[in-house]
Amino acid sequence: MRLLVLGGTHFLGRHVVAAALDRGHDVATLTRGLTGQPPEGARALHGDRDDPAALGEALDGWQPELVVDTSCQTRAAAEHAAAVLAGVHGYAFVSSLNAYRNWPPGPVGQEDAEPTWDTGDDDYGPNKAHAERVLSAAVGPTFVTARAGLIVGPHDPVYRLGWWLDRIARGGRVVVPAEGLDQPISLVDARDLARWLVGMAERGQGGAVNATGPVGMTTYGGLLEVCRAVTGSDAEWVPVPEEELLAVGVQEWVHLPLWLRQEEARTAWDVDTTRARRLGLGSRELEATVADTWAWMRSSERPPVPAHRPAPGLPDELEQRLLAAGR
Ligand SMILES: NC(=O)c1ccc[n+]([C@@H]2O[C@H](COP(=O)([O-])OP(=O)(O)OC[C@H]3O[C@@H](n4cnc5c(N)ncnc54)[C@H](OP(=O)(O)O)[C@@H]3O)[C@@H](O)[C@H]2O)c1
Figure (cartoon, rainbow, N blue to C red):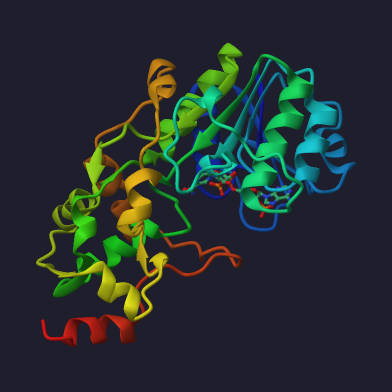
């Protein structure tokens, strides 16, 4: 079928293109053409989603039957897509757990029981929730919104897992959050999510789905252990109590990627994915995700972290200070 990927040149979108080509679809991508090309085999259409005329002009009569939307970040982008693509057979939209009013900190129960944002703020979560409503109203029952949690895998230009792989590979004494090691976390491999999104669009399966890995699939410490094994590193963990990390200015999520303080982590990773599991969202072995991410990081020129994102990782000065503090 004719499948349009809105996005398709960075991370998740690339894997969606690959999955759609693998399924034999006739694939086109729509991007501004500023930050990369889609994988070979897809036709690259160009236009800015924030421009009301761009999508229609770029399609130029090519009518997609299926859409996977990985690139929607603004209300305007959703509204323009709704105006042009309402008649498609299946539309799979990549939203976020941030669409929920109560996440973070969560927990997140079953999709229909959790309120989403309905305010006019120009913020990530409210924008995703607005986009879901606009597109769902236009497309109807074959609109599915995947409220994604943490997405990882090859081609991830944000390098949250990537920073840990680099740091652990370098070896030596590595600062880790003492209480965080036992904290359950969940993630979804971009390739599993991509294949599933294409399948959902093909089936015209609608609704809202918490699209992340099963609760308790691993722990923070378990993930770091896999990184140590995959990189063959001799890294030695230096557990630092949360109180001390916060006191010296270590930022959750950014300086120690994927780390949240206990109070928040307890509920933030508690997301009901029963529906995702029932609808066949896969969750490959964590070892495979980490090993493939590491292989990609070593084999290719790494794309830069997008300009609007903070570079992940513990600044050297903070690391030295924490390592020197009596340990
Ligand atoms: N990473 C996570 O852990 C996580 C968690 C939850 C949800 N999400 C969501 O998952 C999705 C993943 O994104 P991704 O970066 O991996 O997708 P992607 O489709 O691989 O890359 C984003 C694409 O959007 C295009 N783009 C950006 N602005 C555009 C515009 N105004 N008009 C047209 N195209 C535009 C970019 O190309 P050009 O720059 O060339 O235009 C690029 O191709 C996002 O929707 C994100 O909100 C991510």
